Image (tube, rainbow, N blue to C red; front, side, top):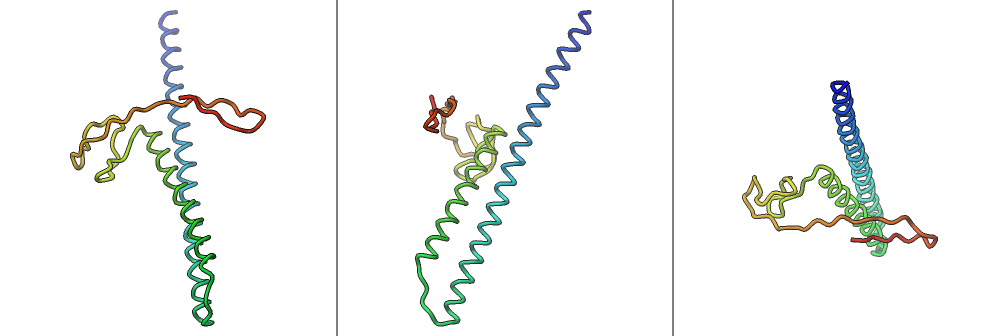
Length: 142
């Protein structure tokens, strides 16, 4: 029976590893979809800004800079969401970006294999997220 027990244990381990990898791939796919949605929204905002400015130009009217500032703020928010998604994707893959050449490298790399730059030592702390309380606030414990 030892053979079958060992076989079952190995099959369970393989299943667990496969399930974990599948979950990571699904998370990455969702993040990439969010990035594409945000890029599409940014392009729509660019189009709207250009359209409004051109309409005012044709009519020889002055335009309200507040409108453009509001739209640019929306673009800034979407861009920061894209950066956050990209960072999450790197974390899923246990990678980081070299601050000098922006190459994707292993998270534990001491030097960048592409440009040779020494990497900063970053201490990674895991955060424990506690369930939301009645006030709907989230608490993190380092």
